[in-house]
Image (cartoon, rainbow, N blue to C red; front, side, top):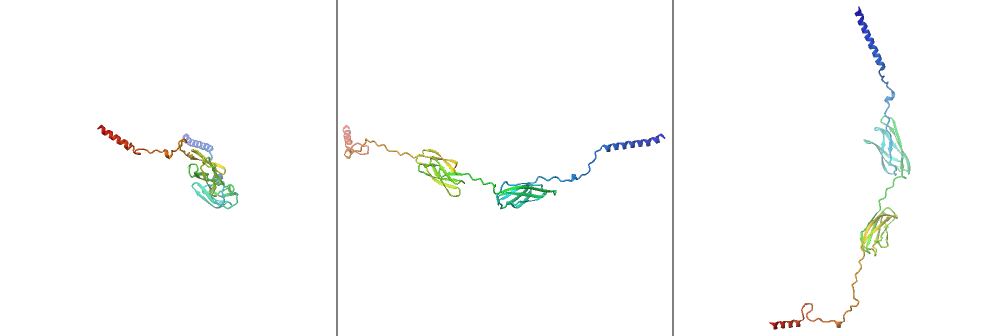
Length: 273
């Protein structure tokens, strides 16, 4: 009887022990969070914007980059832009357009549409037209001499190309020092310089001016005029009178003695023999 009673008791004790352990484990285990509405919210869209040129003129063809999430759908509009085209490439969005024939001023450019998640996207920017458009940088002025060497009296053609309204050159190598140039109305000025009579042999600088400002100096070499050499004449030397002229005896310009002298010499030689 004791054994019969003992086995069920042990089984009951074991069951109670296991039940208490399971209950304790369940109490200390973390509870899984319940699903919430925020878990299904979309990721916020990337920053949306347009990188417009700083200033443009009516009629200019422009292109600019646009920041927007890939897969977005949007449009760009402005009173200052015609024919806006939007292209999506691997590097992002690009827009192109033609600046409308509008008055000078600042005009708004707006972007409106939806992102890939359906959320609305928008951006705004300002475009300056006309007044603040960058002016072209003028080409640098240049000077050219038809030759870089001259003697007194030589002429040298001077050419200056510039966007200024006037031009000239100056140099101590040229007669008068200042050489004015005449323009052709297209930015080219020309003139002729004459090498001065008093230049010395050496180098001179030719300064070129455009709009009253010196922009270059070129080197010009000169050779002074040769001084003519006058023959020396002895003032005490007077020409002979015709009566004072003497007629040479014997052969002239042969190097021989007179004939009489030669005959006498021959006779003397015969007597010795």
